[in-house]
Length: 382
Ligand SMILES: [Zn+2]
Image (cartoon, rainbow, N blue to C red; front, side, top):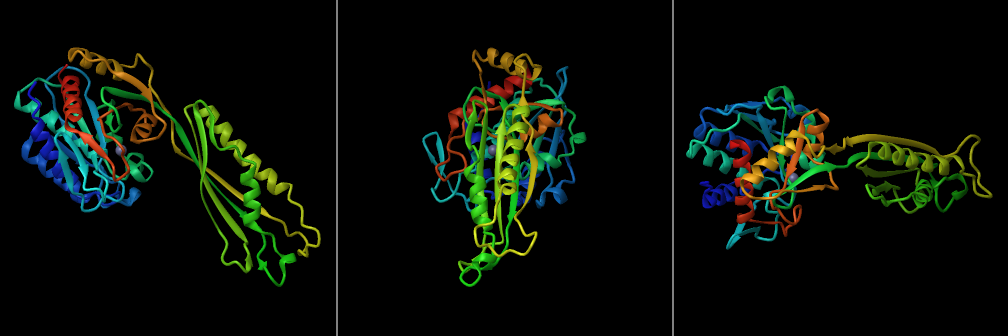
């Protein structure tokens, strides 16, 4: 197989230096469109109209490559956006390992995946290898709530199943990921001057604290977690706060448990508010008592692929041809693949070797990227 590691290194480095923080993917998307147009005139470039829904300056891209092997088309997905600090990235290379200069992320999440896909296509075309038809699906705003994937017009895809290249690990497939609910609630008390009329107030922050004290957080069982991540409220130390807003999340690989835990949190908080009693000596107008406004929304659905799913068997076969074995794992986080699976497109996540993502310590090894490129070529030419 004629994977050109140095060509892979060059395109990876070049792409990392094109800023594409979430919502500002346009320049990078244009770079990819131009590259594909110049090098692969047979490819059909489409984009959806997701900008309005995502708030990004770029739409999602779906690039179709017609193939000459019989068989259903497959797709490969990467996200165009990177987390902050991700502006003015300098790529350092030490032997085969890439890092940033230390003041930004590297952006290998997810540009390593895109570089791997481009090198796989280049290698296949160069060697004129017969291959399956495939779509490359590049999404925006993955890092800020999977917005691009959620807004993706899947009618642009010819493939019904495929792979997201977006995980740590090599020769690794992620076949399950939890579902997540986001919740936020507002506790409303009564404002009053803290020094002059404390008897007229109901302290919303203290009440929110009582609610939180009763919640189970952290790891709830072997496949579920809960967290409170943000509290806001209050105006000044001399005012009894009228409201407090609490935001959190629940995750579980089981949708039943997710629903049950979410309900449990709501019930626990509601019970604290319902059981509230005025302090001795309180001077509240009649009928004044605290209120609760509680909202739960789905952030993303769970993904769970059966071990014998064709989308996994295809990788097994491709790996066997390379005399490799693929490990299977479940992930703790959600990604575009959750959304794709939720839309009925069976999607496994392929590890691309990125490390310490979402930090200025992020790095990736060229040998791992080359290894994954070999796997992609094998999948496409099997
Ligand atoms: Zn990612």
